Amino acid sequence: MRDEYDVIVVGAGPGGSIAARTAAEGCDVLLIEKRQEIGAPVRCAEGAPRDQLLKVSRYIEPDKKWIASEINGIRLNAPDGTMFEITQEMVEQLTGTEGPFGYTLDRKIFDRQLAKDAARAGAHVMVRTRATGLIIEDSHVKGVKLNRLGEDFEVRSKVVIGADGVESQVGRWGGINTTLKLKDIGSCTQYYLENIDVAENVFDFYIGSEIPGGYAWIFPKGRRAANVGLGVLGSKLSAKRPIDYLNEFVAKKCPGGQPVELVMGGTPLSDALKTFVSNGLMLVGDAARHTEPITGSGIPSAIRDGTIAGEVAQKAVHQNDSSVRVLRDYETRWRNSFGRIHWGMYKMKEFIMKLSDDELNRISRVFQGIMPEEASIRGVTMRLLKKDPKLLLTIRHLLF
Ligand code: FAD
Image 1 (tube, rainbow, N blue to C red):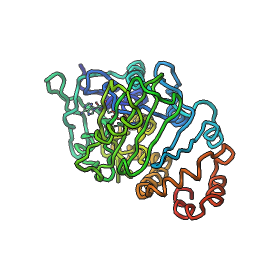
Image 2 (cartoon, rainbow, N blue to C red):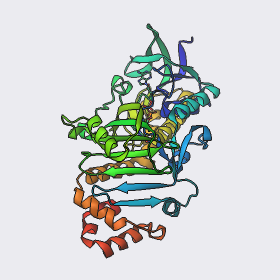
Image 3 (cartoon, rainbow, N blue to C red):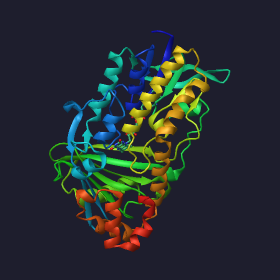
Image 4 (spheres, rainbow, N blue to C red):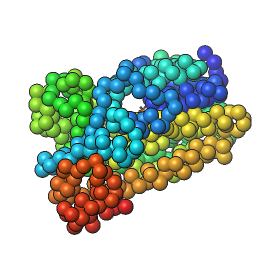
């Protein structure tokens, strides 16, 4: 066991494993994970748009081993049952790409594969090893305090990457304010259900006031199985718990389904942090609150962050300077490429939360039967003008 590395990555989720793999191309890397098994238990609905997943990392190639279902469309179900579908043809038209729109992953295999790849690239991986604090000298992070099987020890490094997920402590230990407001936390509960009638290649979303400030999902996982869950905004929680909403939803939509797994967890739905770097420290993925704030999808963003942070860590090690002056490059690259998009999504989330059931029903009615050739701002605007011009006024913020 060495007591010094160039880079220590805390957390072997997708963000941490990709950061470790990227940094390992030119540095000595230690990747630590508190759980005994990487990828389990799964706290995720495992859905990912293919384009986003592949675009964010040169390391990710579709692999049958971790693809549970290929997805060809998304259905949005309004409170009154009206539904409209975004088909693969529409996505192809919008993005100019071909192939399935997305996947339901098997994250037990996917996360483990990313960690294996990091190990093959040279990273030293330690499971059942928990970060308990940071070594900080002269306001500079110099390593991590660890506990493994009851034994405390310290490992020093030039750079620490905090990839410790939504409940991240690494940021707080390093002096970064990662506090989330209740209105920016999704409180999620999910069953993995077997023995249900489910559309095998479609993501289903259900919106409306029955699920306060959130939505329910059915993401198919192979034949007659699916992740069925929902998220409720923290600020809307009441005596009725997310599991109560979920049990009602399952009774209505998936009668007879057998819950083989129960998942509970939070997801950040916030605007970007003021900063997510400090001397010797970078935060990635959920720890940096970079999860997409409308849907709570955080796999692509964690991988994207891990890639950039891994590259910047390499640079800092080679320049022998891990001050915030050098690490800020990660933050600048993130803000230049995604900062505005993330901010726009956050504003959109705030807006969507205010839509009434009536407005959601009207939106669904307008877009029911939309054709691929209408999948553009112009096409959508024309459809609204024709079918419900008043609604265009209401939802113009979503379009322009
Ligand atoms: P994580 O995957 O959370 O990994 C963090 C790792 O750090 C964990 O392995 C943890 O054990 C480890 N760790 C934490 N603290 C320590 C410590 N002190 N020492 C050592 N190790 C530590 N996203 C999607 O894209 N699609 C979805 O369909 C989707 N569905 C979701 C459904 C639910 C119910 C929830 C809760 C989330 C969902 N998300 C989804 C969000 C997604 O799971 C996260 O955004 C994603 O996993 C973030 O990756 P990460 O690498 O940042 O963190």
